[in-house]
Each structure stands twice: as structure tokens, then as C-alpha cells.
Image (cartoon, rainbow, N blue to C red):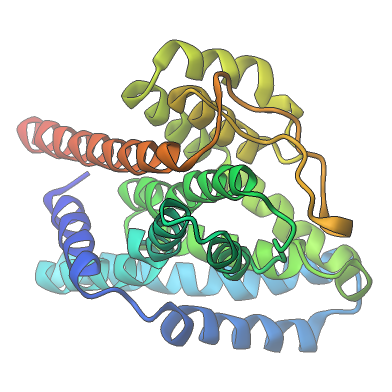
Length: 310
């Protein structure tokens, strides 16, 4: 941990709050073209081809950024700082998802259920026309907890560990897993299996650190209880850890069956306490921000300790 790491994180977070990134133009569009190119050239439905495509698509850019960063750190620290800020700006940010959550919160507060459903559907890329207000609130909270982890806490963790290459590794691994690992089974077959596994590996430790952060800044006892007793019930373990801890920290019940027609999946109960409602959306905002502040304080402490130790 060095001062460049801390300054980069603070500057990137500050810029992103006042100048949100046009994600579709600068991130989603180029990455979609990149994954489509690799998939078109290498996908024959075999596992080993998925491994090769993932290595080219993820590790080649990550290694290139790491070499560039280490060179800049050695010859020109200001260049290393600028590179770090740029990579963080492209790979993380609350504003990449917070507008959905804020608008859904406002729509539910105003009693505009249809608008809240429409916003949630746009956010999740999944129909929600049958959802009631409680279900909309519940799923919005789940999305906020997962998104805050995937777009803020986890990239920051890997950035603190490996520099800009770490943040890029997480973002690319997440995108490739979503694009290939969570895609059409008939189209991707075993080709997408490695990308799904890779994301589970890369996300294992950050998910538990984020869950611990939720517990520290929320209801600690209930968060740990839900984490210990409920996380295994969720279909995807890392997400289960995050949602169980977040639900316990908030004192709200998440999961539970919802009416989404044929898209409905296995949704066991997570958390304790009351049904989700519009007030819990406000509580979720507080939990997300307190967890971010805790993470920044830890970065400051680690930077100070590194500086004193040197």
C-alpha cells in the first residue's frame, strides 16, 4: 500500500460523484464488442476454448496494465497516479447504479408503482410487471447491496492489493462471467463455464470482506447470524453471503418468492425482521455509504502504516 493507491482512490471517487462515467459508451459497449469478437473466433462449445478465450480477454489486458503501472511507478510517479485514477474511474463507481435506486426510492415514495417496476426492470434487464411494492423494494435492496459490492468495494479491494491491474481484473472477470457464464446455455455450452468459475474465485474474498463491512456498520449480531445460517441457501454462494449479511445488518427480510412468471428462481428467505418497504430503501443508502467510509478509513490506516514502516 502506498500513497499513490490512496490518492488514486480518493480522486477517482471524487471525480465519479461529480462527473459520472457514461458506462454504456466507455465500458459496456467496448467490452461487449471485445467479448463478442473472442466468442466468435474461439467458441466451439468446449471448456478449454473458454479458458483460452478468457486468458486472452482478461489476463492480456491485466498484465499489460500492470507492466505499464510498474514502469510508470519507477520512472514517473505522476504517470502512475494518472493511470490509477483512469482505471478506477472506468472500473468502479456508485453513480453507475445509484440513479436507478434513487429513482425507484422516489417512485415508491410517491406511490408510482408502475414507474418503480419499469425502473427496476431496466436496471435488472428482467421483466418485473407483476411485482408488488414490497417485492420491488425487496429486489431493489438486493440489487443495491450486490451492485455496491461489485462496482465499489470489490474493485477497491483488488486495487489496494494489486494496483490498477487488480481493479481491471475484477471488472473484466465480472463482465466475462455475466456475458458468457450467465449467457444462453445453448449458445455457450461449456465455453462459458470457466468464466463463471473464475469470477467465483476472484469474488470469494472481497464478498466476505464486504459482508463483514455490512455487519460492522449495521446490526452486527444479526448480520453474522444470517451470514452463518442462511448464506448457503442462496443459489450463488458469494451473493448469498453478501445478501444474508446485508439483510441482517438492515433488519429486513430479503429473498422470498416473487411473481416473475417463468423467470422466477429459487429465492429462500434471507435476513430477519420486517418486510421490505420504502423506508428500508433509505436505510440501505445509509448502509452502503457507511461501508464505503469504513473502507476508505481502512485504506488511510494502511497507507499511514506503510508510510511509517518505511
